[in-house]
Length: 294
Image 1: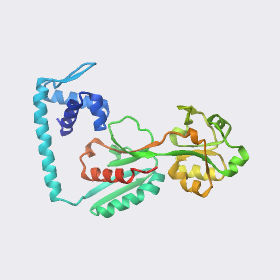
Image 2: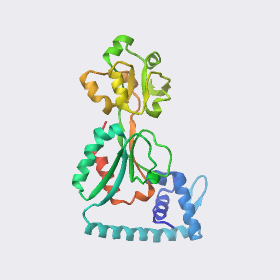
Image 3: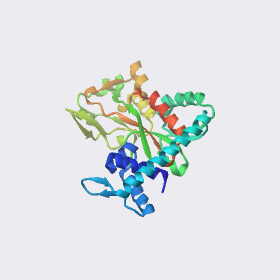
Image 4: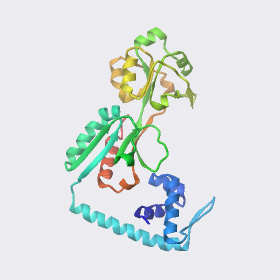
């Protein structure tokens, strides 16, 4: 039996659903189901009655829930007592952040956080590869875009708008696309894994894929931005990468009625890090500072 199992069990009871409890705890439904089965096996008693329509608590589960809540309350009081005596955050924290967004947005925030908590030490890796958080010993990773299903906990930090744009010189030479279908006749510079499969844009209230092609596919937005500025084609990138070029007039926006959906900005961390005080404070700090990021 693990302390985490008690928290999951109480969340399942409150939500009356594995799926709802998993969403509230930011865990996968499969993980919640496995932990509840392991808890029942360790106790040698059925705590929950499951069927396709309804989930209910057994008599043994009701008794156990009272003790579980009391245990968690005692743990919380103990943690509060210790944290009140130790007001200063401390510890070493290893974090993986994407290159472009890390340099433009996260680097100054990390410096600000460390100035507020000088006893914390950060090990920061900038790169666009998806690290193995558990295998490589990372405490947290900041990721942009869709997330694969895993046992990692995800906390949403915000959204990043994307824009379609090109240089005036390219448009003067190749013409300005008026509708998404026109992109099929243009050189399109594609970004990241999602860009390799085309661009998903909105048209008449619906989203569909356009199988665009072009001379460059890259996992680095700055490479594609510079290629677009040089007149090599149309690019779809997060606004924070192309914003300065748009402001200077080096690039101009296109197909504003057909803009793609924003990218989600998330923090991922392993299950065993969810009780980390540094983790909690740092994520709250990021969520506040990135609330209005675009």
